[in-house]
Image (cartoon, rainbow, N blue to C red; front, side, top):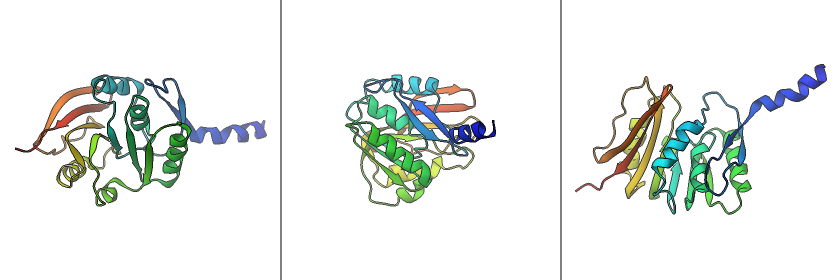
Length: 198
């Protein structure tokens, strides 16, 4: 009995996400469990990608706090052209690389870095950015300012923000227009579109 328990124990360190639409619909990808890691729920994910239904194909995407990669992989499955995933924890980043490699034909890369450091690098123009940072760390306002001011966004880029309901509204660039806004459980999530400064 002791041996049986010891064999099962490591599996508790591995969860999974499921792709809910697109070419890899139903595909399950392993996720290493880590403190604070919260894959976006299927319910929220389905709502988000319904919002993006006519905008996702051919986009270049940035998943800035990648974690499980749930949002980024879903975007690839639904026709995004390319994906950059930023993840600061080494073991989680390695799992993201393995998952990306398992999706034959997927164009993407994983960057092992924290979001703030990544945004000090050479900017690339993204059409769609996913922002689902760790809760209770007040990262959104700083990150959004950098995305806007340092050239990381395409002229009409869309930005998805997921945060805890108890947090204060982040300070966002004035030319970001809110398109959608919804709540689920302890989470509120919003979709914005960048308008070019006149």
